Length: 282
Image (cartoon, rainbow, N blue to C red):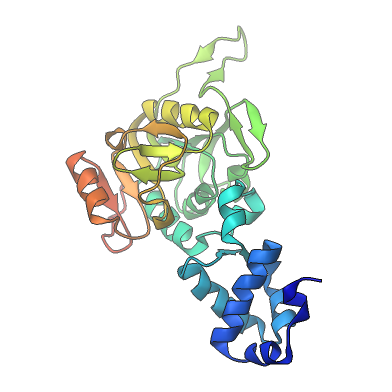
């Protein structure tokens, strides 16, 4: 039996006090790795709303990672690449803000490329007022999120499928039905969700194949918008997608740290946040 399962009477009483409950909650999540809101409410004898508030606060303090319907330990979050069902709940509010802003960069009757990642699902939902788009993506979840009235043509890039992201990895190309030749793909806007961004590393992600594909997507677009929430600031992952100047826009939920913000400005990248706003592009 673990120490957490053999609590003393005093420890049981401390559950009723917010500070003591939160400390024990963090200890429990750290031990078991992953929990649900319901299981925590039962364990600590408090309401689901109380648990949700506790988890939001503890996530903000960096003591655990809030997910859809629960939480995971910091160790699990950093050690294991998050599967889609887990990643959908991370930074969900921030992703919705980013998706709405990114959709405003899209012009009707144009072509866009969208990469993998759960942020793109927010973008897809935010495109509901657009029309006559030609959309190409490696994200297998995007088609289900798109209103059918939005797109005129919808293409999925081929390649191997990564189970953790439900996105394909391969060349950014489409083949002619007869003859098997590759078509040259060009679009107005590439929307690229990344894993990390820093002054020195530029835009990075954890997988080499994804990095190569995202970099190629950028080269096929007249304009490039990189998307990342504030949890990605000042971090560098294994594979570089491109330097800061490879994007025209950086769409995020809040202003980056001063050094990173200055680097964007020096490289001609426009930062778009909910505070700065953006007039819809016609």
